[in-house]
Length: 204
Length: 172
Image: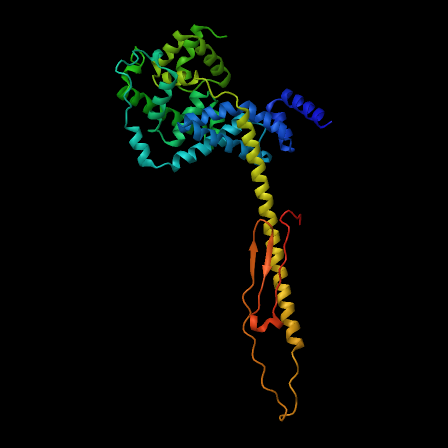
């Protein structure tokens, strides 16, 4: 009987959308919450990894974000997507981690250029997955934690400006400002450190 | 699906973060499959080169262990909070009991003290004042809460010893 009830519940939660699952979870339905975690864990972990530049740390932050989400479900506003809300929690946790890191270490790392193969890629399309992550992690060290989070959420994750503003607790104009500043820094440092990765036209 | 021509027209507003969310979603979908349009956009903003590459990355695979760990943390924190709340109530109750027991005992001892005789000739030697009792203390461990107070050994007749255990799982 218990097994039957569990199977029925699993089937129901799989058919619900995020807001319905969040409503069930708010009522204490752990299976509904587990379904939400299952759906969004990859995105939240990936986003946290891009902000933090560290997969293991990102995994811990993503788990903590879901735990906080569970504990604060009563505060969840269904006007926003559940994923946006969890991204918000994870981003803010990641920003806190960045702020708490030793700034001397970060500056030191930011000025290192790891020398790869003597024959590097000749065009942007040659950038491999691991390489682009490494370059971004290096250049992103020059951004403030909030610029970094705004850039990742807005540009890489493609989340709307209004939702990023909600996530970071600032205005849309501030989000745009953070993104433009982040772009300028990345553009400049990409040109200085990795000119070979710039587009063939040279850009601006 | 919007055309390449439309993408080129919208590109400046896309780069300026001025596109409405629906238009931007369509444009991003187009860019994901059109290298020529991506190059046109990157020519306007070279920093977006990194963005396309990162967006194309495969994220972590679905991880059932991750889900299980999140649920385990939720259970753990819930238990800790419950125990923490229980302990607070237990300690408050224990402190109240301690005060009551010690206060009551002191009163009883005071009342049971013999009245001094009224004739001077038969006055007995004054009773030695009992040494001060040791301070009460509370011990908390995995079994429960114990409350103790010991009197000096020389005054064992008057010694007070209170010890009780409160079950930490007890719902108050």
